Image (cartoon, rainbow over all chains, first blue to last red; front, side, top):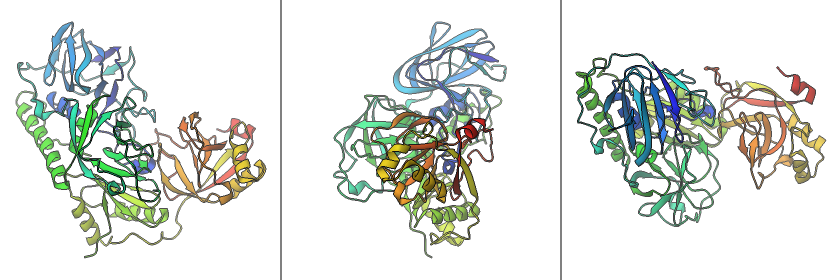
Length: 325
Length: 222
C-alpha cells in the first residue's frame, strides 16, 4: 500500500518510541512527544506499541491511500475528514482504497498520531525509526514530511470494525490546556528563591520538540556553585540564568549545565507533549512511588485494550509489550 | 551494606557524583558490565554518571542495592590503566577555516602562530559527548588559550569546525548554531549515522591529538 502526502501540515514527522541506548554518544532518544497516544494508536490497529506512526502538530496532514487500510488517530482532538466526511478519532476506522484522509486543526491538545495496521515501513537507523530533525536522521530522509512523499505499509484485509465507540478521555493525556504536571523535586530546588510547586506558568511560543519554555515570575538562584554539565532527561526542568524554566522534551540534548529544579514524571510526559503556546502549567510534587504507580496504570490500560481488541483484530498479540523508557 | 551516594534524576534515572571524567568513564564501564535488571544505559560526564533504568522493572533503590551486591559500592577514585584509545584529528587552521583565531590570539596576548602551536601540541581527553551527536568536550586545553564563549552565538557553524569554549576545546560534528570561538576545521566526519556500531568517531574516555594540515590537504581529504 502507498500512502501519499498531499499536504504535510505544520510539522508532521515519522515517530516511534525513540532511539534508546546511545545517550553517551550525544544521540538523543527522541521519539513521540506523546508516547502514550502513539502506543494507543498502534494498539487500536493491532500493531506492536513501538511501530512507526505519523506525528502531526497543531494542523495535520492530508494523505491519500491507494488501498484499503485500517487506521487510528489518537492524542490531541483534531478535526478529521475522510473524503470530505467528518470522522471521529480515538478509535480504529476503515479507509477505503483511493480515499483521502484530511487531518485539520487541533481543537484540543497539540499533537495527533496516525497509525495504520501493519505499520509504516520505515528503515531503522541507530535503533529507531523516528525522525531526529536536529541530527537529520530517521523517518523520511531525516526531515519533516513534505507533499508528494510516499509512505509504504503492508496490505491487509480490513475486518469489520464496530463503530460507535472511542477511547475514554481518562485513558488519554490531559488535553485541557490547563494542566497539572506531577513532578519530583530537583537536586537544586532549594537553591532558588521559591519553590516551583504551586505557581502557574504559561507555555511560551519558543517551544518545540527540544523543550518547552515557560513564562511566569522568574526564579532567582540565591546560592550554589557553577555546575558542570550532567546528563539530563526528558521531563527535567532546568532554570537558565534568565530565571524562566525550560521543561526538556523528547529531542532534548543529552547533557545540560543549568540547575535542575524539578523533573516531570514519565507518566505525565504525554500531557507535556500536548501543550501548546499559551497553555497554563502548574507543577505538583509527588514521590517516586506515585510516579511508578501512575506509569503502571498506563501500562495496564494498554494491556486491557490489547486484550479487549484481540478477538476483533485477528493479528493482535496479547503478550507483546515494549519497554517504557 | 554500603551503597553509592545517588541523587534521583526524575523517575527513570539516578545521578552518581564522581571526582572527575576518567572516574565517570570507569564507573560507567563497570555498571555496563554488571548490567543489572532493568538497566538501560549509562551517561558519563565531567563529575557524574547517570544510570537510566526502566521504572516498571526496577526501583532506583533496588538498582543501587543490586549494584552494591555485585561489588559496585563506590565511585572509583581514578581510572584504571590507560587502555584508552588515542585518536589523531587533522585540522586546517587557515584563517579561512578559523574566523576567531585572531580573537583568541588577542585575548591570550599571543600571535596566531603560537595559538596554533599550543593547540596542536596539547594532549586532550574526551570528558563527555553531548550537545549534539558525537560532539566531544575536550579537556587539556593550555590555560593560555582559555577564551570565553562569544557574546552572540553564530547562527550557523559548519560541520567539522574546531572551537574553544572557556577551558575546553571541541569539534562540531554537524552544522549548527553555536557560541564557541572557531580556530580551525577538520575534514573528517565525527558522526556517521549509517555506521550502526561506531556512529561517532569519539567516545567518552578517548584521548585526542590534533595535527595541522594545509588548506590543500583539507580540500583533497577523502
